[in-house]
Image (cartoon, rainbow, N blue to C red; front, side, top):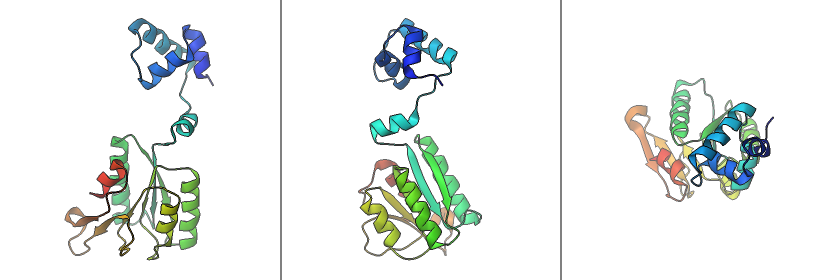
Length: 185
C-alpha cells in the first residue's frame, strides 16, 4: 500500500505539499497539483483515515444503536439518520441490541472504544444509565423515542398517536455539536 511519502517521492514534492493537495488546505500551483494527482493515481494511494482520525481527534463517524432494525419504524429512522450523516460527511455504524440490555451495553463499549464523534441511542430499556455512561465518556448523544426526564441530553420524542411523518418532537439542551443537534431538530 502506497504511503504519502511514496506519493511525494513519485511527484518530486514534499509530504506537506501532498497533504495540502489531498486535504485542500492551502493553494498549490496547478502544475504541482497535477503531478501529485498523477502520482496518487499511479500508486493507488488512499489516505490513512485511522491516522487522520488520531491526529484530528475526530472520526467522522456516528454510532447508531437501535433495539431492532427489522422493525419498520427503526429501519426508517436508521435510514434517515444514515442519509443525513452522509450529507454531512459522516459514516454511520449501525448496531442492533435485539432488545437485550447486555448486548446494548457491549455495543456501547465498542462504539465508545472506536471513538465515534457522537452517538444516537434508541435504548432497549428505560434506564438512563446508558446515556449517563455516554455522557461521562464525553461523547455527544441524542436519545430517540425514550423520555429521560430531567437528564440534560438532546432527545427526539415520537408522538405515537400522530405517527412518524409529523410526530418527531425535538427536546434538547443545544449543547451538542451542530451536526447532531440538527438531526434532533
